[in-house]
Length: 262
Image (cartoon, rainbow, N blue to C red; front, side, top):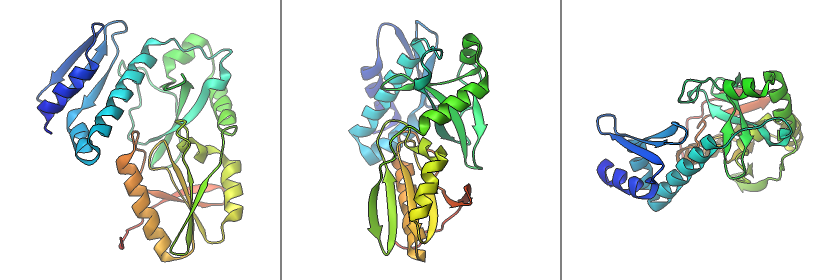
């Protein structure tokens, strides 16, 4: 699979009468734009091809889903008032775009050196990041969005799956509701997990659909955590960070773990 073949495949799946698809061969990017809104999504074809070599058709299916849902979200009107239960925080990497493609800044808060907090309006199968235009249209203050989002994330399920590896315990939260990584903002949940841990508490959010908490009791535990975080980061639809965090005294501190063993 090369860029030309990938572009042909994506065009065959995404072409519609109400869209304009443009391939920039020099930059190796495919732009899919809605004629209705003038808004669109730009794909880096090189990245899609790399993912295809690892995941084959699944990679293309995920990209098509991402584009379809993203364009639909751009066409839908966002109404915050009377829909407060649809507002949630989402975790993104520090390098994630700070504004929508039309130049409107998103509502963003600092989290760690590796991550930022964005805010989203849930639309069922997808969500739209809340930006300055939405806030001004609704006449809301950013503080209100923050308070509601953090309240709502505390209402989400925190059921975890447990796995034991080399004398260490790993807990996985993976509901695929789009807000798994957002649970890292639920301090009550993290504090409850901390009470269960006898070793060192290490947390990871490699992509938006998983939260990993480790009870690290020996050096091998750090190694396993590093390998898992990197693996999840490489396979996630919305990668966040391959780094892990120490959780101490209610604070998250990024740590770099150099894995040695496989």
